[in-house]
Length: 166
Image (tube, rainbow, N blue to C red; front, side):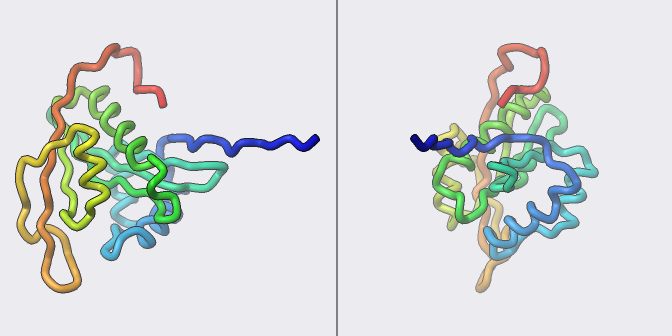
């Protein structure tokens, strides 16, 4: 008899400094105009909520959230291109929204390229609504691209015993 071992489910955990190279590599594969390693380092230094999603010791995605003055801002959610379409982006977004709620935010904001149709759909399904546009926000090959500004109003957390569990 042969035992079949199911792959371990991806695990969420806080981002560490030693994750930065892997994060930057995923970013470079996923985006034409990626964040730099320095931007990720600055996010960690600023104390932003930076989380990674890994499976069997291999990083497959990450998210970055800032929270201040009862508002949260999803700064980056990214899943490695080979891992997209499996629900990992939804899971990362859900974690960031839970963390925003735990930190006392009343509303979560984000910007997304209109051309990033999959991300727009994920955000809409999660309850984000378009509240405006930022003209010429993103770099692009020909002309700059607008950003869709989206927001999600948070309900109070069920309990205040600690950060949300995965």
